[in-house]
Length: 114
Image (cartoon, rainbow, N blue to C red; front, side, top):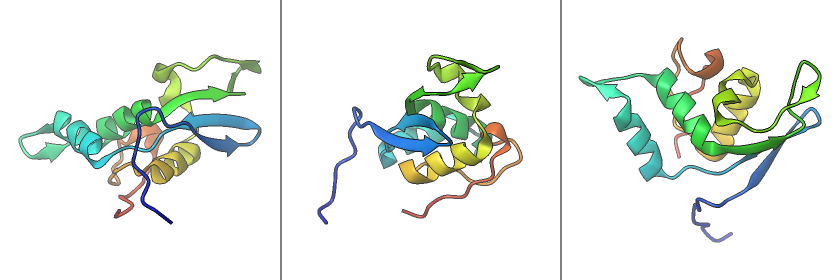
């Protein structure tokens, strides 16, 4: 299989219990920029990194509900998705998250090593 370039306009689909979450892969350059943004005095705020990556990676959804009603996609609501789904999407997209008690939605995900 040939190497595929990571493209900003990618639209991959993650099926989750009847809902669809649309996402894109994240490039190493984008990951590094996000990590740099949340690094102060050599310490990385991995919770902030995770949330910023997820807001970049997740580009939309269908069938996501709040109180039984479908809600339109809003990047500010990404952190309210269940942690298991967020972990899966980070892994599928190539997100680079280290385990921390403060990571997005209390997720504990390690780097994929890719």
